[in-house]
Amino acid sequence: MAFAGPALAGGPPVFAIVPNQSGAPTPAGSSLHAAIRRQLAADRRELARVNHDRRALIATAEHAEARANAATTNVPFALEDLAGRSRQAAAADATRAAQLRRAIAGLQTALQPVVVPAGAFDSGPAAVGAYAVQLAERYLGVRYVWGGSLPDEGFDCSGFVKYVYGQIGIELPHYAASQWAQTVHVQPSQLEPGDLVFFEPRADGPGHVGMYVGNGMFIEAPHTGAVVQYQSLAFEMSTMGFVGASRPAA
Image (cartoon, rainbow, N blue to C red; front, side, top):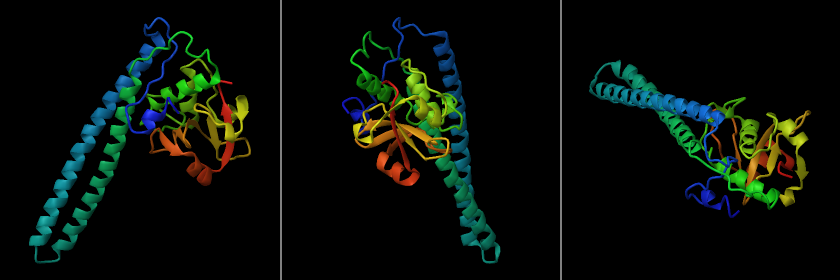
C-alpha cells in the first residue's frame, strides 16, 4: 500500500497519472472539465441556498420558542410545534449542506491535471492497479447517481470503476455483473490494490462492485444519497455477501 497509504492515513491524496503524453488537453477532456465546472457552479449555488434556508429555519425556531416561553395560553403548543418542525428541517438542510460540500471537494479534485510518465506501466498489472487506486482517490466525495459514469454527473458503483480504468486505457462495461464476467478472477487471498471486489450475489451475477485499495479497505460508490468513499471489505462482505475479486489489468 505504498501508493494509497497516505490518503488512507488522512494526508493529502496521491494523484494518479492518465495517458496523455503531450500534456495538452484533449477535446473530450476539455468538454468534461467544462461540465465539471458547470456542476461545481450549480453545487455552490445550491449550497448557498441551503445554508440560507437553514439560517432562516433556525431563526424561525428561535422566534417561536421565545414567543412560546412568553405566552400564557394554549398558544405555546402551536409555537413549540412550529419550532420543532423548523429545527427538524434545519437539521435536514445541514445534512444536505454537508453532502454538497463533499461533492464540491470531489469535483474540485477531479479538475486537477495529471499526466502519465512514459513506461509507467511497464512493470505489469501491479503497477497498473496501484495507479488505478491513486486515480480512484481523486473522486472521493463525488455524489452517487444511478447510471452515472462521469464525475460531473455522479457515479454508480460500476460506472465509477469503469471511469477510473478507462482513464488508463482499460475499457470495462457499465454493469457489475458484466465486469465480473469479463475480467480475470483472482483468489481473495491474492488481492492487490486496484483489483475489483464484487458483492451482492444475484442470479445474473454480482450487483455491486468497488476497487480494493489495500489494508482490508476498498473504494466504492455505494448508494443513492451517498458519495464515493472508503469502506471496510469485511463490513461489506457481512452486509451484502461476497462474490469474488478480479484483476482488470491482468
